[in-house]
Image 1 (cartoon, rainbow, N blue to C red):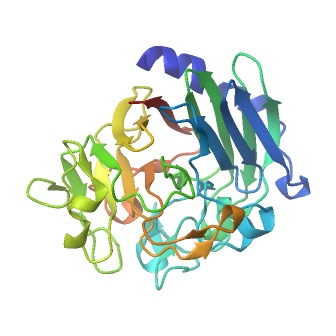
Image 2 (cartoon, rainbow, N blue to C red):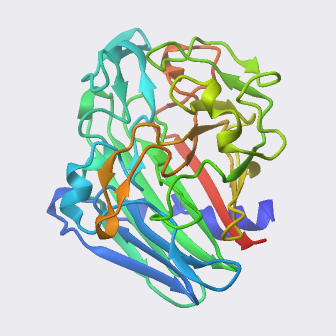
Length: 358
């Protein structure tokens, strides 16, 4: 599976030279559908994001398992990046600054004194260019592209970025997130920020969903959710999901629910490894997540309270996120796996989602 998936799904970077990436802001915002049987995904080039994913449960009943909104305007006004490609650096950067090659870079703070998800106008808030779109057929796919300029949101160097989505059959899809540094070393940590509820986006909370996370260690954080720099064992903590357990079983032992990075091991290669499996027993839907990244952020939408698709009100714990990623604030922790991409070099992030019923 690993080698075949990488060769078949993910080798996008080689066509960077012929993408013809121009000014993405000249692009019109649209909704694009990928369909393979009764497995249907809708996406938009605003934030290169997933808008919906419809698939059957164990009885064949279809439901949309991704939280979101009915209109692009609502996505634009949302404080959370529902379904989006997040960058240039996802998650948090402490003090909204970092030093690279002797130069200190100051970023706009948008989470207290810190920067989160690339700043107030990160990649989730821009219009991407659609470079390829094949809505049906053997492998329906879409390729979004964005040219991030030197100094955008305070980050150094120009960056060519793609986010590609491809349906693979058997209720599977993959995401390729790749970036090429043009003229300066720069941190890159791209994330897909889908909010999942396998019972259906309007089915209530996810506390009864069973989760298994294939990580024996996590990176603890301070009161502002900034990593301390340590990597510690999950043993004896509510973060231990090495064996399947329901989300709600120990969530009350935490102050606000789950919002933590797990250390999966490995980084920046073509080898896929299991990150997590989620099982919703009522619907029977199962989601397996595989990635080549060293970490995964497990987040249980702890403070949600807003109106989403069809007017349904999303409350706290209405969804979970499994954001495969580099470690948060790695630019300020030399002991963390590096997210620095040097000029002429490339960042490669692969994620495979496999859905089934049980």
